[in-house]
Image (cartoon, rainbow, N blue to C red; front, side, top):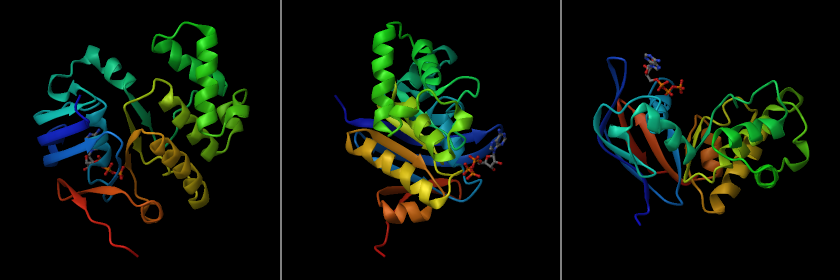
Length: 227
Ligand SMILES: Nc1ncnc2c1ncn2[C@@H]1O[C@H](COP(=O)(O)OP(=O)(O)OP(=O)(O)O)[C@@H](O)[C@H]1O
């Protein structure tokens, strides 16, 4: 089995008729932690959206967790998303139910039926993000950092092959950002592959890793200088 999780060749990404990124060639291998950086409007979110099937790939080729992005039909998108863990800047927890029920909602929606297995899985993922005792709380009873940890737990529910995190620390203060980043680092150390879009250069310096940059309609790898 190939250890390539994501590969794009000569891909172009559009928002409506405007070209956002062109000649995108990149590969992410199993077990890597990759940052995606770039100024506001440079195309990070458009790139992420293409990867989880929210924007069609109209030019070039692309494969992600064994799905062909050029042939991705609407009805296949839920199956792609089950193999991805997606984390957003604004957490996207359901406000009308507690954390346990936020997580069981996702499990049921993705085909889980056995109540005991669901309970164990929820305990497992909440444990991984240090939130095991908070399952009874509602989202509004948690801090931003805690909500993001729950969102990361939710992303882990179906053992994703790749975690896509789009500015996961964008709404958090610097100290909370480091705490959330530590959780992502732990998850990475346990063998997961992570692609994280970020503006937060302080985090990149603290946790250096392979870095791709969006600039001038291109994506290229940048070499980090030691500080
Ligand atoms: N829904 C949309 N319709 C049309 N154009 C869009 C849409 N979303 C984004 N764009 C345009 O696509 C370009 C890239 O935007 P994108 O959101 O991907 O950038 P970004 O790097 O993620 O920015 P930020 O860091 O602010 O989130 C911008 O010029 C933006 O105006």
